[in-house]
Image 1 (cartoon, rainbow, N blue to C red):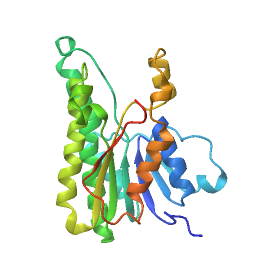
Image 2: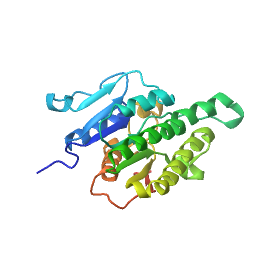
Image 3: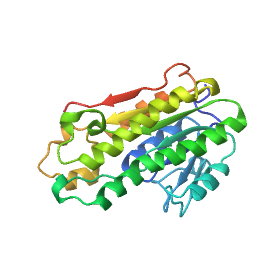
Length: 233
């Protein structure tokens, strides 16, 4: 049986994080070739998978020229999955302009520049494609945003970019969607919140499965969705 993404070229930003590694594992298992802007290789892989994993170091995804060069080096891009970003929280009276700007750059600007470069690549092939962004629960639910004004705003911007871009690209057969997860069950989050119950958090595998469904060639209709993934919280 042919794998779902056999021969497909996929970019994964943030590919060495906990979610990124789960996504890359699924993509490689489905036959994709993954292109990852990063400083280190994700996980331990077998020899066959390593042949289909291309890690490009020292890419600043807030730099338009650097982002364009990276995407231009990917032949026949099918899908671009944008996981790169950051988190921050704090009361607004204790926050600074730089806190807001940093999160907007890490979350919204990187999605904007990567989407821009991905669309240019996909239009060259004329075969359509898939873009998946990552918003977050505080970006789409007001009541979840206490002490996360800057973070929530940056993730709300990701949701807005996703919906606007899906409309713009209808004629190009490029489908654009996003997931909006609640807290992910990662080692970093367990260390940061030792008193929390991780059984109520979303697994990275569940998030990776949702992303895989959105970039699958079998998805020929769904676009402009921001999919809530809230686990059992």
